[in-house]
Image (spheres, rainbow, N blue to C red):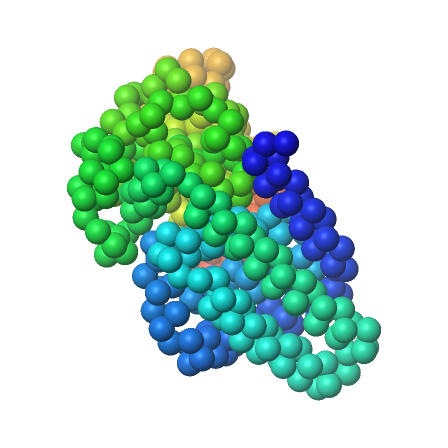
Length: 432
């Protein structure tokens, strides 16, 4: 059995053990979520007070902070009791996180005993808060026992994962260690790098390129199973793997993995890898939720409008009623053709002939729909001064995978905006 198979078998066994956690009643889970920030504050204070030298080391480890680690661990604890989400996925996330933490302990020469102490301190705080809430809210004794046991099960899973990452790191070739240090530095923020990129690249025997791009792979995709050029740096985390591509060409190198659902971040200068990775993962998240097509791979620069819209969803949600008003009150069979026609028309530079060609309809159909839009909005849409905002809102409304509940919310807001307008302009007829 290869080391990779051994690693995956151990991870699967741990995940199967943790997924036995029973889902919590909805109200109790919501209560845990409400109190989670205060619990994280208390755990962080306990660790920083009890292990001040250790927290200083962790805070300087390639972007991880004590609070981030505690936050993700507590979030995992809540997630494994969530009936709406497979606990196997939540456990895989925490295993991947602590494997990386253990590996970084190995690189820094920091023993895992202090990590165990930190987890023990945080676990005591968690148990103390659970016991306090159990007495205050009259929880059944078996439930408290289950939650306490699950707390220490999760701690055991984290320690086992960290130990595995630590052991693997200590047995790796020195050059591999240097390449991983360089990889981590390339996607870190500039202030979080332990040494200049030029020094790290020289130590890793890697030519520092002028530009890079990051390819985010779907969870469970393992870069080590691929034949990659030696200049490509790979992250092997099963929960969030990625590749760093030096001097990427457009649309991409021929050897680029044809994985469906992978996302290629924008090309950036070598010291801005964090930007490429951040957008690649945002794009990957939209692919996983069906809001972008699962290309091979999807390129962020081909979906700028959608990425921008979903980063500003709340603002666009609020702006939709103002920009489109009565259009959002129409039933879907009338509303959607009008919105789609308007979006394509704006993208085509207000050219009805080109719009008809793109939509595969007659030119007169396009002009009829545009007249309907003008009549329904009293000539305020499309506003020549607000084409960009209108296109972003339309992209947001028409994106694949957008929830139906959102349309109802926009219609409610549009109706309220229309009523308010009518109240301030007596005598003006209300548009249907």
